[in-house]
Length: 185
Image (cartoon, rainbow, N blue to C red; front, top):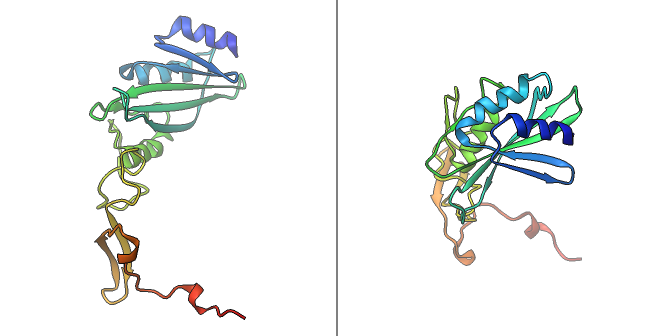
């Protein structure tokens, strides 16, 4: 594996190489992402044909707040590698959907949770939050309680959204607690 990493460093424009617990990762420039992943996938010495995961990390104190991590697997050489890019809140990332078709779901998920925009993505939609949801819940500056609360209203026969009242004693519940039915014996 280390030999493969040494070859990759010689061939590709790697900004930083990290080795942690025998797992290698490369930090690259955001504008070179598609080209680097294409080379890692198709080059006969690497053959990282499987994209196992795309994830996001939020570091609000950094200049480049978000880190997008692409985890690749080479079945032929039984090795894994991580490719990382750093972006801020306004810089879009090129979609790698054309290189790895499965990346479309993860890119939509990162858009939904962090607000990182992906260029040339065929279906960038919210997956885990509601259509009218405001904000990005996995950002570290997102309030823990959110801004609104959703509940099903039987009278209106639909889901309604209400602003959250943060004080516990002022919260209103329209259902009986299952614990109130138990009596002490």
